[in-house]
Image 1 (tube, rainbow over the protein chains, first blue to last red):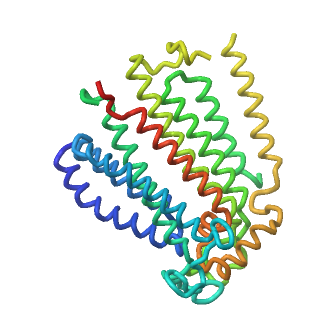
Image 2 (tube, rainbow over the protein chains, first blue to last red; image 1 turned 180 degrees about the vertical axis):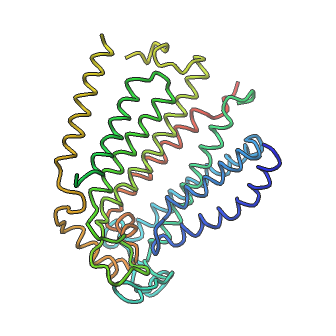
Image 3 (cartoon, chains in turn green, red, brown; image 1 turned 135 degrees about the vertical axis):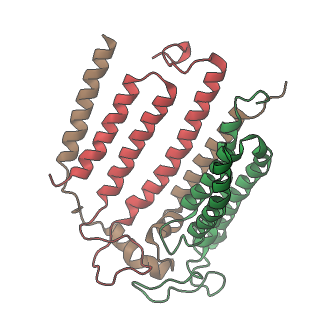
Length: 149
Length: 115
Length: 88
């Protein structure tokens, strides 16, 4: 695309990346979560593909596809953590360790990032999965039909 | 009309079905299926609305609010949106592959897809 | 002939959908749901999450999310299998 589009996308892409990371990271406190933030970051991939051409992102797919498997495996392993009680048991919530703090007070509260047990970790796993999967799909769809396909 | 949101979402579903039977282009069929998904998602979310309710999130919730919107339809709609996204990606990939092999996107001209 | 049949079927379906949605319970006044009330009241104490929707998606109804992740994975694998570079 033209130099205007490339310059604007250079400015917008880091901001959108930060916003996607915020949406994933605060999924247990504010509207959002792994899927939504992952979709935001995948839209950054689409922006880069539109602005800079799909050809230079081809080798990213080799890195993105294993990343999706890593996200899926992390999600299942986090679910297996609670197998002492049941599958998907939230063992970290209220344990006092990582993400184990209780909510500041019941009812409306300002929220604390160190709460909700396995939920933030699962948000990150699912976010990684959605980023990698949708990014790879966007790059592959835009690459298809070229001479070297 | 007390339940205009339901009517509007079902109108979206009807528009999607109209697209499915009136158009032959595979991309437009994918668009029609996406419109049906959007109608169903809107219907599910509006089913869980409680009058005067706030979003089911406690972070900086207004303390004077008494009720919250039902959270379960929202969670299931989140699931439905992601599955719709996956099926849309798969449909578009099928359309691209069919165009490359047959040179056309017209579902009436592709013998294996003729209904 | 076939197209007229399709158009008639669409009219019947659209009438059914629109009429049925117009006769539902009024918007904003759903039946009191014990499950949703439990989620809203106990999500902060049990899951320690302020966002009740995330608590449902990843804790109470985690199996749904597992199936959803499986569907997304299968779709991505299908797209990659169809669109990858074919050798030879």
